[in-house]
Length: 288
Image (cartoon, rainbow, N blue to C red; front, side):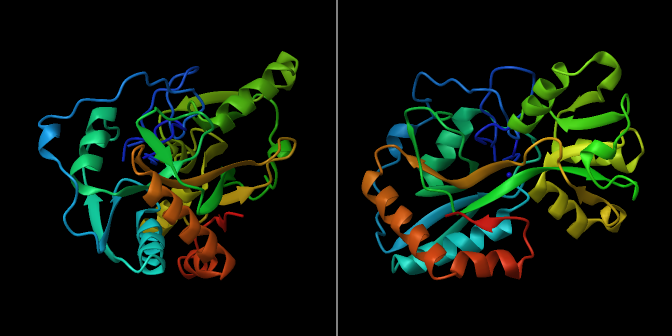
């Protein structure tokens, strides 16, 4: 997802327009585990020129090409539109910038989207001008290794390096756990700006384990055979870190938000979302 930190991704996660600055370590967004703060509605250039959409028979949705799950999100959005008896109309957000600012997200919403998919649903993590849907899937932050002798995090010897996607709730949980250990029992933790950077560091042998958003590993393994040997290991002694992923709407779209929530619930109940995840072999489960 742009998943900047664990940010409720407002950047494309990254992830993810994942870029709501959370409060704590630096980045992420990836989600970022910092708590983003928004006090005012952004101002987009010429925003007064965007009126109510004319074609009420369409569901205009945005997915961000920088998000690892954008194809999956598009398939889910198409199913939501079908469930609402609307014609799906996709707008693919494209940019070579890793993280966009909040104003760009707002402008894209005004001009192109009724809903924008691909956002981690962090409690109280969004500004007042945004409303969020129920999650359509749940995914995890995972520990990944290349060494076959490492089957679980607890197999990693003290002082060995972990590359963790910075600012995410998983990163903060790891740091909190390590702070309770004696210095000689701790692993070394190197904050990484993105999950992709953490995975690259693992591939190059700079770290022994990477802590990343599972969809990022999935996307890397689809596009680059060099990542095929990387494996998800058990997080023990830490618990799994799971986040729901859903869509955002402008806060005045209360009726549409309620309709989308009902559609998501129906698609979960009839197995449609699970079927889409299975089709893509995507590392997530349909949200309850």
